[in-house]
Length: 187
Length: 222
Image 1: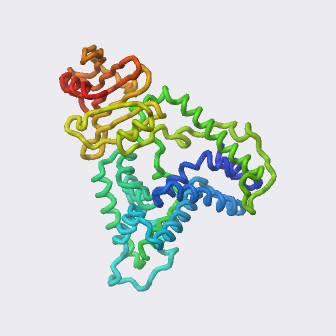
Image 2: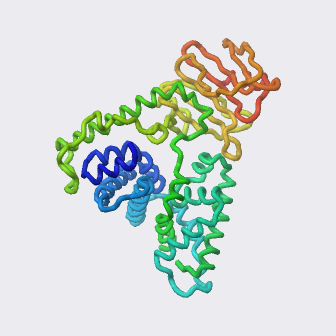
């Protein structure tokens, strides 16, 4: 079914919207959640919550890109769940590793930045930065830090060696930190 | 925590970036899969999933599970509406199920299999079961790329999924089996044989090997 038709079902408050969403994007939502949570049970819960949230948001929202819309909700819910679990000291090493890597992009607090930037400034800067990257580097970066994919998965999917993926990520993190500093963004 | 703030901010990147990096559902290159053989099974699996979802959906409506308050109560679809369009196979079904060890794959598929610990000096391997009736053991090189693929499947059809055209084909007796070997320039890239119940294949992915090297691998595949 076309995305537009699925969205029409949501607008008509027709419950089959959820079944159709599940058929088309269920595995996608599970992948996004599972990359962060590494637990099929929690990811399943996250997927179902994604559908409920989508049901409540459409209407009034009318997403231009249904897949990205669902993925974003699933990712945010998974991060919420991750934070809750983390407080309970549950072991989610792979997401911890990703967060450790992201610590490298945070500009040096002693650098010449005037104030802590607000969320929208940070979001805008990251988006603009992605536009400056070559396609391969950008895809690798997004697969790692948006989809929380493992280096092995990324290497396999794009047909690169693992060392190439790691090197690309390292360079992109370094570039992002420099970019944020040059834009005067502090985290 | 600052890292989480960056992680959240990355969540709001443009849709085009999310789309272009979306994970593919298949786990390896299509040329290594006996795709045509499995396409029909995949379509059937999609239908089963579709029907399953529909049944679950109906259960919800008849009150097996209490529907959420915000959800509507009046059913408005029928089975034909739910399943009238087969979704994109690549999005709905992945034919590969990966396992940590060969023992787990054997248990899951019910196909007994043994393979060499090392092939061509490569020991790192990925083990998958494809649609429940084919075990695929892929030996990886230092860059994580496929070097050798050994497969065993129920039936007698060539399980390799390798549809490359090779210049040379010959038959060779290895142990009790008559093995068909294919390759270019005097080297062997693919070997296929059957014991009447199961079919086997060995593929050297990147460069062909000598017949003696191939025979040595075959002797250790059961």
